[in-house]
Image 1 (cartoon, one colour):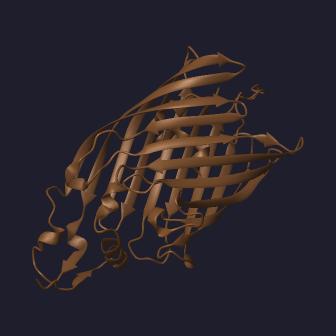
Image 2 (image 1 turned 45 degrees about the horizontal axis):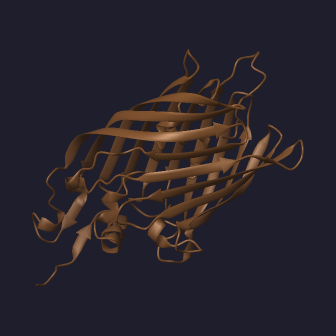
Image 3 (image 1 turned 30 degrees about the vertical axis):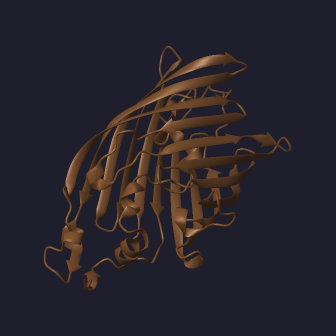
Length: 316
C-alpha cells in the first residue's frame, strides 16, 4: 500500500499527527502552569475553600511560532455559601489545537467538613457539558474524502460528570480528582486522574516559599508531573521556577509536553493580582527556546474592607 503525502494548512497539525498518531485527542484537558492559583477546573472540591469569593482567568499560548499550536483559556468563579460548609462555583475551559476545538463549562459544588485547627476535607462534584468540534474544512489532503481523516462525528455536545477530594489548611493542601468521567470513543476522550499538593513555608516574616506538585495520569499513557516553587515577598510579588515532564524522566521530555519555566506575579491591590509564566518547549526531546509558551493570569479576590484574617494564604 502506498501512502500519499498529506498536505494540511496547519503545519503544526502535520507534526501532531505524525508524532502522536491521533492520540492527541486523548489529551483533551489542558493543564495550565498557574493551576495553583485556581485548582477548581481540575478539582471541583476547591469551590468555596476560601472565606471570600474569587474569580480567575487564565490564557495560555503554547509553542509560539507554530501555526495551529494550542491556545487555551479558562475561567473559574468560587463562592462560599451559608452555611459556610457549602461552596459553589462555575468553571469553563476553551482549548483549540489545529482543527480541534474543545469548549466546556461546568457547575461545581463542594461540601467542606471541618477537621479542627482550621483544616477541612472537602468533597466536590462537577456537572457540565462540553462541545467538541473538528473542523475538517481546514484540512487539505491529496486524496478526496481520505478515510484517514474521516470521523464518526465532527461536532458533538457531551455531558460531563466529575468529582474530587480536597484537604486544605492555612499552610498545606492536597487533592485527588477525576474532573472528566464520561468517555467518548469517537473523539478518543479519556478520563484523567489528578493529584495535587502544595504548602507554604516561612523563611522570615516577609519571605515565604510555596512549593506545588501536580501529577496527571491517563489510562494507557505516561504519567506526567508539574513541579514549581514560588517565592513570595510580603503581599507584593512572587517569582519562581517550574518544570514539567513525565515521572520516568528527570529532565523534561516531549511525552508530556515537557519544559522549564519561570513564573512571576504581583499584587496590584488587596483584591487584584496578575501573573505570567514563560515556558520553554520540548517538542523533540530537546529544549526549544524558539517555540516558547506564554501564560497570563488575572485574579480578583472579592475581599471586604473589614476582612482582615484569611484562613488560607492568598497565593493558593
